[in-house]
Image: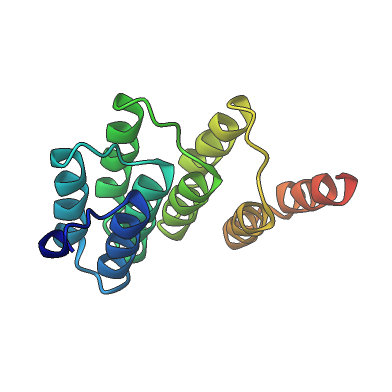
Length: 144
């Protein structure tokens, strides 16, 4: 691209980040993020959320949380995708308390949870044997 006088846009960089994340090449995804900033482009919520999801999918949950902190330090607020990925990750590790904290944080930011978020939490409550809370969340969905 550079040889032809073209500069990659944020869309191009995000596509590369997504590709590396899908392949589990998280170091390369981070390198692309750094390259973006080096070229004067600010990563957006999609850039960070894609990496958070990539870390979660490849069982690097603590790295996903570090990326959430980094994005917030850079003034980018996590979106529903980022929160849902983190919630899914902690639920898989049976860290239900943390998932509830993330869910409340999401709500306090005015971010409505989507079906994926609710389903993840309902499943986690069922796995833990807390059917009352699972049914409560289900009722919450039905009221919306």
